[in-house]
Amino acid sequence: MENSSGNLSIDFLVGFTIFMIAFIWVATMIPGLLIGLSAHGIDYDSVAYRSAVILAEDPGTAVKTSSGVTPWEQEDASGKDKIDRLGLAISKDTPNILNRKKVEKFFSTDFVYPEDYREKVIFGDYPYRFNITLLEEGGVLNHTGDPIPEGNYGFIRREVMIKGNSNATIDLTDYKLYKTYNRNTGPTSNLDINATSHDFVIQINRTQLLHGNITDPPVNPSTIAAYQIDPRQDWIIINITDTDKRLPTDAPLPVWVSNATSLATPDVPIKSLKLTKVMLSRSLDDSMTPDIMTGYDMDFLYVGDVLIDGVSLGKTLPQDIAGKDIFLKFKPGFFGADVNDNFGSIYITLTFFTEADCTLNCFPNTAGSHGMPYLNTSESGPWIYNYNVTNVTQPQLTKGVLEVAVW
Amino acid sequence: MVNSDGQLFTIEAIAAALIMLATAYLVVNSTSVYTAGDAHINDMQLEVIGTDALKMMNSFPDSSNNKTLLANLTRYNDGDGFGINFSRVLNSRTGAQPDTIQWMANVSFVRPDGSVNSTYLNMSRPLSGGEHAVKVSQWVIMEGSQLDPSVLGVEKTRLRAVLVEVLLWRD
Image (cartoon, rainbow over all chains, first blue to last red; front, side, top):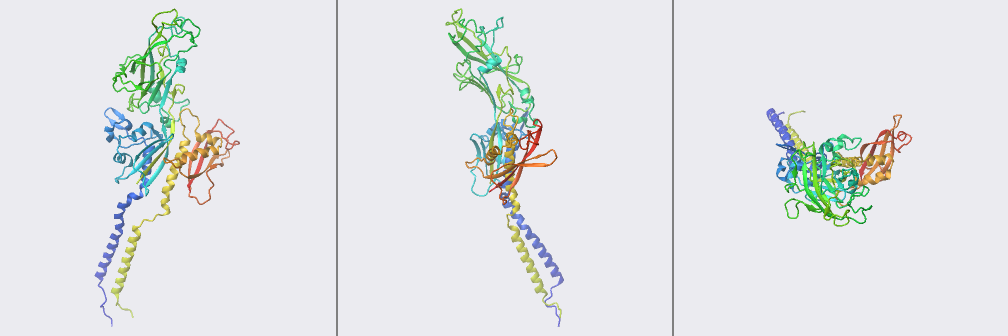
């Protein structure tokens, strides 16, 4: 006999089915809730890779000011909040070639670990820990961050090159080559001159440095930034040496020097050799107002190892330079750090005072002192800081290794 | 005889089966399994290192040089010189111990008849066949070459482009 004791009603079946489907659907969404808690562990490598790309291939963001645009590496520590992104590359056209000033600034105490680096290099909402290390060929090691842990961490290594600074040495060879000494403009045109004050002018031609050809034929324009002398970003270092060396003996000897055929015997000793004034100007004829070094924010002049700040005792001009080298060390941006500071020349005039001791061995024998030829560009024209490899040691690229670890 | 007895038992069984299936699905879906697909991360790291090494060797160290190191080595088919320089750049690290990436390099160029010739340059050690390698490459411009003097060395003043290809793997 049939009965319906065990039957379920149709409406119950329908309801139960809908309930089961809904339950299974909700249950499948539960793993999605858990993914957010463990995501950071699987993207360490991609965060490390992205950070390394920003460091090695991106030049970073410039800071817009009311007067123009300033590269981030020229910004003071107080203005670091204006920097959006820290990149070490010279430009976007020169990936893996790093700017030395940017490297020094990046690893300096101006940026605080980890907050500043998280905001400007690592990015992301998760508080990653990280270690960034840069080893330059020659052993120079820069690093920031925590020690790398033993466990799980993301890692990337990049091979890079770091652009060096240019520098120049003006020595006796240059004196001979460029005849940067004044001569008697009379008929003999020899060194028989009685002058105690001499102006030696160095020209930093930004137009030529930033817009002229570096080599002949020109290098690839897209990589020119890697080899360019850029006063806005690079150090300009000039060493004037052989300051008390005798001037060329191939020229007719000054008559006043003992009437001898050779300077060897007897010699007229130098009585005084001083650097008396340093002046910066935008024009050779001083038609534009020059800046005379008075000791404010002009910390570029060294006589021997001493910084001549123009204020401290023993560190003002005039300075005795006999037997001492003169260093002119202009920091990046000294001649203007804005991206628009790319035209015009800066003339650096050094004024020397020179006297020979003519109480001995002069002809005719004159008591007292006598002027003498010395470093002087009044006839040769300014000594130019340019891409002539004879004059200036050009920027070199040195190899380096950049490692980024994230955990 | 067919009747409608036991329908509740049937439905109960179906419901139980569905619940078991859902549970199994939840369990399996919650675990992360490291599959061969994630090996692309290691491949990417090797590719980046290898590409950087070739790029650095193919860069002028200063503005006065006419030829890059890689161009000089490739031009004169200097496998030993390539090996020393490439290994040093490839395996340099910031720590004391260098890396141990192995490599094998070839140079390819086009013959006048249009065929592509590939010449062995050097290797750190022979491939055994089981290595998981990645390939990186760099175009090099040079004047003539001793790779195949009968082909590339004839017109020494004409610029040539050759492709340096390197297989990289970790032991």
